Length: 379
Ligand SMILES: Nc1nc2c(ncn2[C@@H]2O[C@H](COP(=O)(O)OP(=O)(O)O)[C@@H](O)[C@H]2O)c(=O)[nH]1
Ligand SMILES: [Mg+2]
Image (cartoon, rainbow, N blue to C red):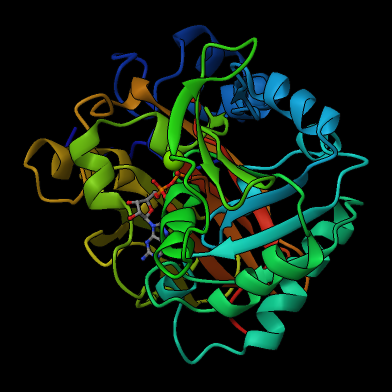
């Protein structure tokens, strides 16, 4: 009958139109549930609500012989130089990791400052990093904000090595790609080697890892270590060509999108934001300038996102993450006031005005996202 009205049932979780036909398509519910219940969640939302914790990515680190190297550092009563990628350090540290250097003097060098907006208040940035370590109950000697590209804070690093740590060996540690080797190279370029000893690379005692030994004088050596791998980082999940597109090389220009409830935003072909509740606002993305964004409706988000991936209309796109089964949907409740960041490990972060709203991220399986205080935007 032409004028017969049919009630279309939607999932109260995400608004998708429910269907009982194709398990691979959005809105699928087994028919027995539609028949039996008044309110039915689509399978995707059902899984999210019921197995959310099991499916949510967890921190995972690959240490190889990292602890062995730290053991040697302890024997040597060495000084630790812990290099932090200023864009990404929050998701590459854990209490367990930080606990491993207990008893040794630790200097944190937050490098790659040149990649953050220039006009940013340096004092606030320092307070942000200090507060991070306070929240981790981590003690240290000093935090230095630096850049191996612009030589920022090179003098501080030089005097730290020359004065604070006379004669002590220095172990440069940190996550892969945090900038350890670049920092050492920059330092060495401005350091006149006073010894006849050579820079050598050797398998470290008791390990399979190659550590570079750089003699500074007759007694003091810098060790450039391979560090450890944050396996939950986007950097550990995608192919080399994608990493090249994904890692910022020049100052990040934040991109603002006006988003309200029911809006979604593709962040390249590697992530998608979904705003479930809350007032319309400008959400800022801090990603490499090569990453492209596309606004879409949550209701059609799966269709739109994977269509864009298929047509190669987003950047970057990974060969390993092309289908809905390759991704996880995770949910966060933002704080009730101030600003908040949602960091996607190894990729970038989103900055929100926080008002207790619910947001979701579609992420490659195994990639970690973390809710953080605002790093760059003042409250
Ligand atoms: N813009 C910028 N890039 C950096 C800086 N330090 C390191 N990088 C880049 O970050 C990547 C990893 O650096 P690397 O020193 O090899 O890290 P490691 O794995 O910790 O030794 C490389 O592509 C470097 O060019 C920096 O201060 N500024
Ligand atoms: Mg290195």
